[in-house]
Length: 163
Image (cartoon, rainbow, N blue to C red; front, side, top):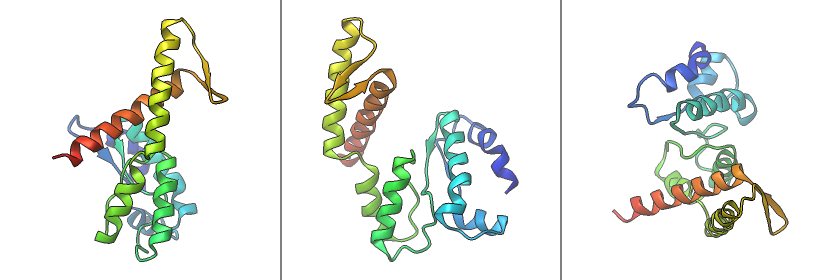
């Protein structure tokens, strides 16, 4: 568990580092705790924040992936983990690969929404506006940045799939 206190230093240790993750089962065993979403939340998020601070990709799922046979639970874990900012995860079984690919990728609806936000916010910036409303939702710099990042991620996934 001592490495958790150096997560940011580890994530930024070398420019060749591209991603960071925490092995939930390993960490829980070393820390003497039960590996579940509740107990692993803090250590997993600590590693995610360290990865973001280092400018690398945070990988992982909030809970443990040991029970991979309950695909419904795995799918929900992936969705929850993506919501918290994880961008991918390792797979302990081939059955998890299609779930990760489907759930970690932006949906068509998310892409459409991001495209609308980016287009509308670009126009707003030209007009000197710092915030606008789209469908009753406030859109400002962080929302536009998040939309651009989603589109970049979508483009990267599409490029990879076309190889």
